[in-house]
Structures are given as C-alpha cells and as structure tokens.
Length: 220
Length: 225
Image (cartoon, rainbow over all chains, first blue to last red):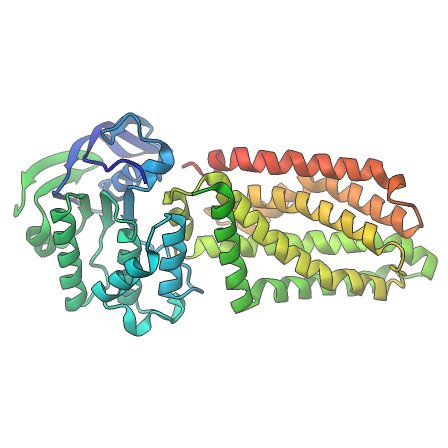
C-alpha cells in the first residue's frame, strides 16, 4: 500500500508549542539504506522532529518532503513505522492480539506468517498470549518494536528503541536495524546511547535548542 | 482499508476488551442503578405521578452513565498512547470515529438493557404496550448521545481535567436530544402511538444525522496536533 519512501527532506522546519520553540528551523535529509542517528540534550527537539516527520504533529512552518507528489495521506501513513516513548499497545490485549489488530488495520496480506516471524525475531513467544499489562518494560518494548516493523515500513522512526531491553534484546534490535538497512529502509533513530549510535548509525545529526548543530558520519 | 472494515476492527477491539474486563458495563450500570434507586426514593409519590417522572429518571440515568462510559471507552486509547498508533495507521480517520462510536453504542445499549426494566420496576410502569416504540426512541436518543460523546471525548484524551471537560462539553450539546427523548418516552407511556410522537422522532433523527456527519467530518480536525 502506497509508494515506498526513498528519502525524506526536511526544510526550515519550525514547531511551536505556545511560546516554546521546539524546532527552530531544522534542515535535514534522511536517505534510503541509511540509519540517521538524531542526538542532542533533553529538550533539543529530537522527539518533536520525529513526531512531525511521522505526521503526528503539524509543523508551524517549513516542509517535510517524502519524495512523491502522488502519495495520498493513508498511503503515506502506511509507509511509516514509529516506535515512541510509549509502547502504543493495548494493555488488555496480548502482544499477539495487538499485532493481529494492527496487521488487519494495515491490511497485511499474510498476517499470521508476518506475526510469527516477528515473534521469533524478537523472542516474544514465551509471553505472546499474556495481556500486555503484565509485561515488563523490556517485553513491552520488544512487542512495540514488532508493531513498528509489522507492515514493512519504508520510513522507520525509532525514539530510544533500546529502552528496557536486555543484551539479547539490544542484539535483536541491532539485527533488525541491519536488515532494514539492507532492505533500503529510511531509518531515523533517536538515542542517548553513544555505543548503540556508533554500532548502528551511518549519519549523526546533532540537535541543540531546536536547531541542527552538527551533521557528521558515524561513528562520531 | 475500507472505512467500514476499519471501523468494525476498532469496535470489535473495544468490545473484546470489555468482554474481558467487564469494567465499563459493570461500573457505569452500577452508577445508573444508583441514580434510579435514589430518584425513586426522592420522586416516588403515587403510580400516576411516577409514570410521568420515570422517563426523565431513565434519561438522566442514561446520560450520567453514558458520560462515564464514553470516558472509559477513550481510556483504552489513552493508556500507552495507543491513539497515536491508530492515527499512524492508514485507516481513515472517520473510521476511528465510527469504530469508537459503534463500540460505545453497543456498551450503552447493554447498560440501557439493565436500566429500562429497573426504571419500570421502581416506578411501576407497565411497558407491555409501549416497549417496542420506546426502544426505538431509546436507540435514536442513544445514537445521538454516542455521536456527540465520541466526537468530544477525543478532546479529552490529552486533557488532564478530562472527566469534567467531557461533562461540560456533552450536556449542553445533547439537550435537544435529551429533551426530545424524555418527552417522546413520556408520551408513549401515556398511551400515544408512534405516529403521535413523530415530531419528536424527527428531531432525534435529525440530531443523529447531524452529529454522526459532524463527527465523521470533524474528527480529523479534532485529532490534529
């Protein structure tokens, strides 16, 4: 559903929350097959930038270009996968029920096979049938990662994806990012973890007070 | 993804959660029962007066329980910020409105299935002849209530004063539907035919069409950041 996103170009992006200037004129480019790490101190605008690129927040001014004029809004949304601070999972449904619901909302053709694949990849199997309310933070994060990747998005936006994950979980995350890179996915990753940044990142964009302070190659 | 299919997925999800937790129907119908019991203690004078009071008590109980039910229905989306995941999906935004409204409508009808016989019992109302037309009024009144409630409940997802805000927004707006429902129900209990209450039913129908349409159109605007 929808055309694959090959690159995202952000121009002069400004986002105001009342008098607070969360983004103060961001210019950046995210490319297919690259993991762009967005870093910066708390309040520098990292999560707001992801929310605007994910179309969850409207920019006050500036543009986000997804590389196609023909893309309709639902088609564009179908190409975006997001992992945010909150797990975005129904606590009273099990992990697999959550994945099955979103698989149907995204009209995935072979949902059972896709869910089984993600359950294996993120080692969700042992708790797959329990309500998410009973999950630990790390277990919730694994299912949230599976939900973000479920519909094979061509633009992947991950906000602190390693939160709560154990060593095996971080290894699974890194393997997933490598697979997405190989598949040509445009990936943006917000993290404060310098080691993770250096292991998985291709480009590092450093934000400060809502502006791009530095763009460099990873490891930086 | 068609609008109807997405709406059904969202409604079925809400109903599955409710079947599992039974949280909304149990708590809100218990609250409705309390309203009916307290009203019967306060307003019962004699069988004739009570028959005139019963429709008002029924609709106040439905409205109060309904506000609680609407708040609970949106709590599913608030927890873990799942609303964002719905907004990110390619499902039409109107389908989210329709799905939440259908789910809430089923829950409200379940609550009303408890409240209607209870009001008949406590206020000594014989529903034998008026039950079928009264059910039509109840369904029409509930559709309007749910449409308004769903439309404005979404505003409360990110509000801290959500319960108070929901009541303040819903009650003034549903006044025409509430008033029409009370009067139509009272006339039916007084022996009027469905045809004689047609004017009130037309108001209810117009209210339903207006707010279902407004909900489907305005929902996208209200969820935009």
